[in-house]
Every structure is written in C-alpha cells, then in structure tokens.
Image (tube, rainbow, N blue to C red; front, side):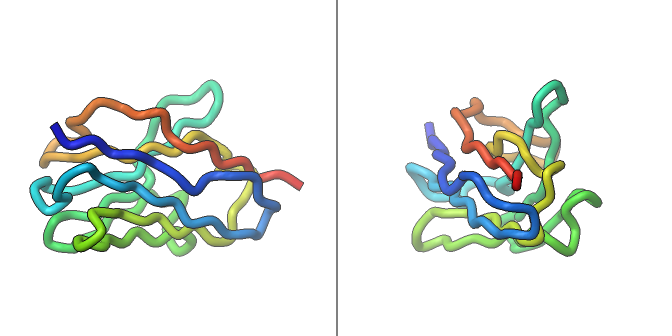
Length: 117
C-alpha cells in the first residue's frame, strides 16, 4: 500500500510562509486525488486543500487566496505553499490519498505548523 509522509512544518511569525511536502512511496497518479488536512488543538480535522489527478483544485474558504496546492508527479510529491500565515492556521497538517468521497488512507504523523510571534 502506498504511504504518504508529510514534512516542512515549523514555527513562523504571522504573515510568514511555509511550504509543506507530501511524498508518496508510490505513484500519486494512481489516486483520485491528494488532500491536505489540518487539525487544530481541540478541533476536528478539516480539509484545507485538494488536488485531483486531473489537476483540479479545491480550497477551504479559510485558506483560499493564501494557500496553493500543487503536485510533481515525477517526484510523487504534493506541495502546499502557505502564505500570509495567521495564528489560526496553527495545526498539525496531514496529507492523505482520496477517492471521490474523501480520505481513504491511514493517517500519518503529520507535520506541525505553529504561527506565533
């Protein structure tokens, strides 16, 4: 089974940027899509962005205009470029493979993003 590993998190000041990477052990082209999810302390995990096999993208309203999801099929990697980060973006970020109905893989350890001055 294909495994996904997240990386790239860290501590950043408000207004700063980070780029997260989601690297698969196999071809990401075999999935309907890959989603970036996040879970803030005390809150449910939510979908932040998705990119499908065809390249279509979806963004949650809370990140639209600030986050950009992209993929590099040759590297089996999906990226999440996060700009204009705010404290409310603080969360553990996870990626997962998706079918038409949502996430279908097991959850990894994620990568922590902390936005604080």
